[in-house]
Image (cartoon, rainbow, N blue to C red):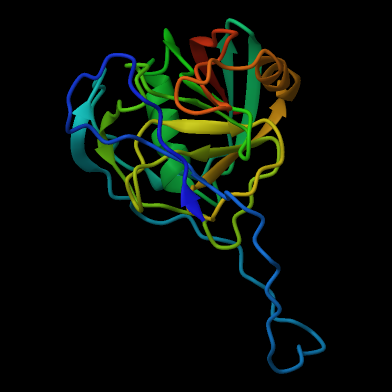
Length: 238
């Protein structure tokens, strides 16, 4: 397993900035058989995840387009919502996984309600090995962040089929504002918090992917040829 290089900044703002990257499976890994005792006739049920009473959002740099640091509200975090990103290529809607990733979905909602993503663009498209469109950086360089970080969630058994919305990061527990849409089933290590599921607009993502990218990072990894400008993000609780 190797690390897919993160986006190379078009204009680096600071040499010490972190770059939010995705791990890719460079080769097909063999299936590993496990051995153990026979399973019980009735497997134990897994309790539904409980919304935590608090989430820790830690001040961090960079602080681009700073909107403050969220103050976690467990009651608000537990309420289901959907988010619609109106982009220059069409609208994309996803259902937030508020029960499975309450800290992440609360942060995304906070940023969206403070217009953090408005007039930003999706800066990275990958079309080989992994199949994602990465967004959420107001600088458009791949190194921007909201001024805080928070821990990973919902990683146990995480998979990344088409329609997954997940956090990009710079290592464990470094989540900020950058996230990605999976436009085609993708194999990734379970290191990126899944926090949403696309309910409308997968065809928009596939159209963007079909337009290709400019290979500025590596073959199959660059800036989308069809610019994806986020005009606004609307949160709906209906």
